[in-house]
Length: 366
Image 1 (tube, one colour):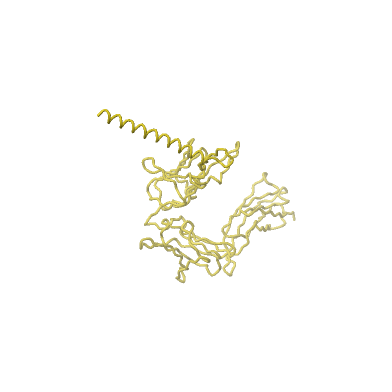
Image 2: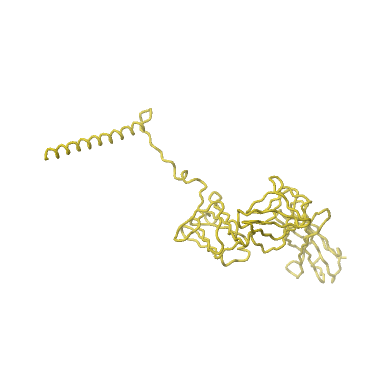
């Protein structure tokens, strides 16, 4: 029996010795394979961490129950009524979200910052909160800070509501301007990206068929008219169907516009042009422009800062025939009981998003 135990122990030692030799040989073989033709040992390079993760990996995440996180893609569908919390990594973070939340100073929205991340919390979200949510890293050089466009992350979030297939709007009858040189958008956005949407003219009742060249649909924007023309004027609405549940959107008035884009074209006139002491005079600054482009006015005049004047500003839309619509913006400066100090140059400055134009006229004593 003892002899048998000794033999087993001897065989075990031999096996262990062979295994050690094979391990040494494997290491040696690996070293030989890792030796370059010049005799020098090469280094095995692991792929960089950034290349494994991908350059466009989003840092925008949604906080789920029990401390779990979901990295958001280009779009996401969430349930209305359930609080939403988004996080973005970084010590300095900027946010954007549907503009109406700022317009109405919505108390449901809050943003908090910490040393490692920033969080956006939206309480009791509804279909109206459907839209783009994004965050970005803010880079500062001293007191000057700017958005890092290479580290900006966005997700279009749908709050899908079967009772509200279209994103609600505060405007129940919206005007859409059609221009021959740029696309127009009928902004009937859906809350469910799977909903089937169509565009309809009210009178005569007809569906405008979508195609790849003239009319396309983007659920994040609405119907896009690529080359709008005057024959598309009229009252329109959108229709959406999801699970055999059809719904109708707000109505849209489509108006054709043919006014060139650019700085304001200003006309300034005085009535009367010559006055006597004690008379009243009105100076009117008029701008013709694009219907939806706001115009702001400012004045310089001889008695500025020394006597009061009345300034009144207004605008209106005018149909100029052949389906063309333009906007008339006016600012009127009224001087009562003219004195010597009021004679001289009156300058009107008109400014829009394209630039600024100024024009001057004189008030002379008769």
